[in-house]
Image (cartoon, rainbow, N blue to C red; front, side, top):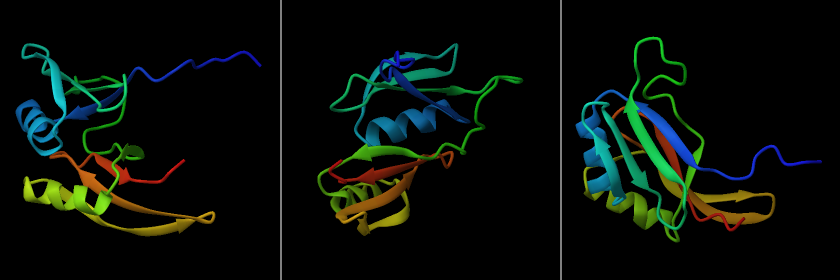
Length: 129
């Protein structure tokens, strides 16, 4: 079968307040901001360890896509999710599910869930696969 998808370029989230979102992704998660367009209320961040971008902007009236605060299922990697979640809280971020040991399909790993200021949720995991 021929590939229809050849990679992942970016993950985009809709947000309500661009300055709060920029502060969270930069100061709490430590992502590097690659660009910011104030007129478009759009920011682009580098995801560590990957060429994939994390983009965000205020959703325009009538624009398709998920409403702010409804993103879930994006998984960030960290060697120690327990420590990462503690550091996120220390920096003022929100942990919606404390990191804990999970056993799934014979594999043990830690997983926690964090949220940006709009409630978009991201998993932090050290699952090996």
